[in-house]
Every structure is written in structure tokens, then in C-alpha cells.
Length: 158
Image 1 (spheres, rainbow, N blue to C red):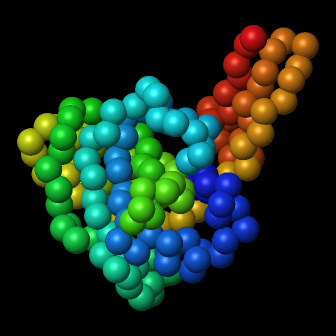
Image 2 (spheres, rainbow, N blue to C red):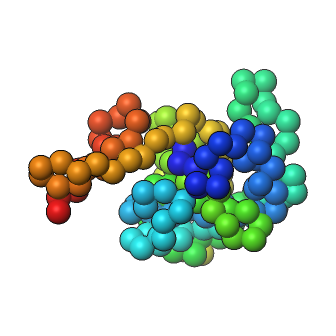
């Protein structure tokens, strides 16, 4: 989970409330550094609209119960979803979440999206927030997150 700067100190309940009537947009690979950054290398695959309120009572295991206007939406492009941006009703970004199998925040009913076919979200959860920072080394700029997965730590030369 990567929070927009405006929500850096928000509680989970604040984040859920901000999503009332907002959107969850699935994107292919090319995730930007965070929600405050422009999307440049990703195509929107499908858009879900949250109800108001956006979340119902949590499940017994603590998983938030996301409430969407439609449980399935038609994909607008072909691709493998890799991340999602959640926005307020006015379009302001709130949080970016990981999408896919395994320990990700958004789970889908299928692995990929095919244009003109339905896409279904089976669950949404919020993992611990990732801290993202840039640092300058003798070899260039290094992009680092606090995520435990070493493959999510990217080095950028220049």
C-alpha cells in the first residue's frame, strides 16, 4: 500500500471513508512511485466504482468488505493487472495497491483482463504501508521501499 501524501497520517477508517463514491482502477505493469505521481507507463484495464459507504463491516478474519456499484465490470483493454489506484469521488488519489495472486492487496477472479469481457474483484485488503524514498549514491539514484521482497527494490542509474 502506497498512500498519497495527503493521507500519510490517516487511519485505515479515514482511508475507507475517503473512498466513498470513489473509484478503483486496475492498471497493467508500470506502477509509478506513488499516488501523487502521474501514470505514464500503464494502461487502465477496468474501473470499479465504490458505493457510499465504500466498505461494509469487516469479515470475521478482519478483511475489509469493499462495496462496489457493480460486482463485475467490462475490461476496456487487454493486459495483466499489476496494481490499482483508488481515488476519491472527485478523482483525487488516495492509495495505490498491489494486484495479483499471492500476498497482494487486490485479488481478482481471473489472472488477466480481456477487452469486452468481465473482470471481478474477489477481495480487497490493506497491507502495511510502504515507505518509498530516493537516495543519491556514487552510482546514481536508488529507489528503495521498506517492502521485504527484494524484487520490489529498484535501482535507477543517472
